[in-house]
Image 1 (cartoon, rainbow, N blue to C red):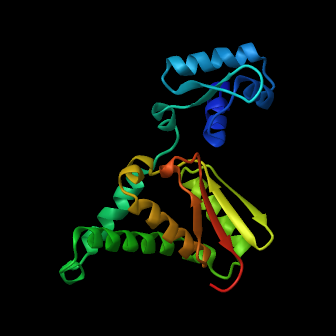
Image 2: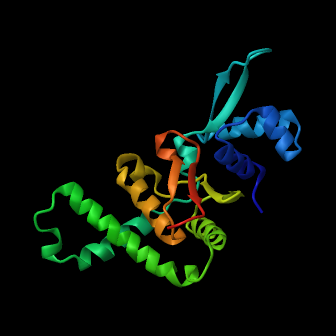
Amino acid sequence: MHSTKDNILAHLKRSGGSTVDALALEFGLARMTVRQHLSGLERDGLVASREERRRTGRPHLLFSLTAGGEERFPKRYDRLADLALQEVALLEADEIAGLGPDEKKRLLLEKMAERVYREHEGTMRDKGLKERVVAVAEILREEGGFADWKAEGQQYEIVDYNCVYRTVADSHRDVCDWHLSLLSRLLGKETNCSQFITEGAHCCRFVVKEGPS
């Protein structure tokens, strides 16, 4: 069972930030109790607060995760390293001959995406788009993501609140492109991302539509 502090951290992760009043309402706690938990999380360096002004009334404090708080959530740098090492070992000299550094990186990421796709190819076979969306959200959760999905007519959106490759992706945007390419392969249709965590959003939003592949 998760502690109240763990639940607060998870809520801040999903919401991108919250007030004492909103947290008290969410968890059915007294405002004083929420403040005590937040004070402890601030002392631990997991949460920070900033003053936010409203159009009317007094300013209030908005609490959000610090970098230390972000690192409390699952990260899969080991997964990324393992995939890269497996594919590097299989590279042939003629595959990379004449390629520049960026081209070599793209080639490696393409091969990594293909390897992950093959791992899940059987699961995706003969599934419609909705079933694939459900399966992909589950795969993301198994990898450590905080993924949800929803449908709006012929369009589906997968929202992931936790980037399991955050530190690497912050330095190498190619990792975001690789991840998006992988999701397109798994879903069997071109997938777009309307916002990235690495660009300052509190979640990544992946959008895929019914229609020709």
